[in-house]
Length: 380
Image 1 (cartoon, rainbow, N blue to C red):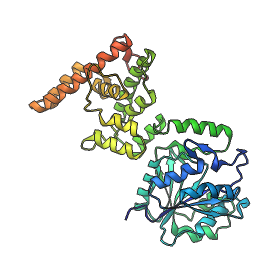
Image 2: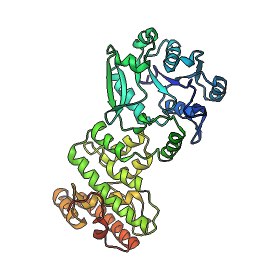
Image 3: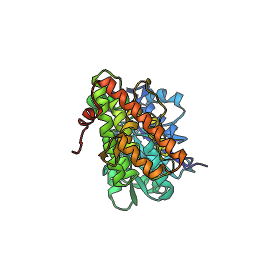
Image 4: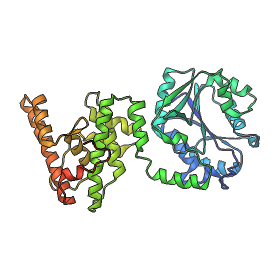
């Protein structure tokens, strides 16, 4: 039995979509629709019971949901507001449910890692309402213990669910997540355009999400976080110079991989551990670069890519201080290279770094020191 087997997801999709002017649940979003994306989020998380509450344009929504295999109930009183849809769904929860997510359909870009964090917290705090929280701000979806169902059903509905929380009789806990999208809802055409742009980069965390993941969610020691920021700055400076010279590189990927490369630094085999964590959170491209930031197989003739730049930047920096490859290699040999196998590993890593540095200089036509002098936030 998994932690998800006795959880349900309630997706609220009964509203009029007045501000949008078009029916939000069925708007195209990527390869599916808005409601299809939210359903897929819970399917991927292993939530078997998914209930969508319909109201406005119920027939069209039910027809669209039929192939997805989810429960759909129609709230005939949907004009009374979202809380009426919630009570309709809560009244129809399966008898074995222990908790349920409450997810407005117009918050469709929630990351898988947010559900992972909420489910993990629920196993430790099954009697509390769990609110995902990004940078001190609560967002969607909350995870609610089923023990609160009678109180929700008995609530007047005045002020909606927020007023129910604010009554002060509900035990709640905030769960830090590295997910800006819990705060981003879809109300207007401008929101829709911004959402489509966000979706095109959904597999890359933003700078703010990287910071939250490192400092709040994983709570890495401050020196590690400072080192990661310095590595990201060096790798970004190289990537920017290479792009200017015509190389096809993704600066957002370089930056994210640099910021997150030591996310599991305190664990054994931290590169593999960090990559596994980032895959779970929905960042496969970042995970691939993090997995090889310690050992990277490449050669002088292999085209430069984002992982190589993060690897090189990591080898260039002692903490936050740019030290250079020769000095860094000497330091590593003095500390770890007493035995033959360790010396060979260190020598191989720095040989690889030298190859990458030479390629950067060849493609940019500039000395590496000159390129690195342009890194953002550099310290003299």
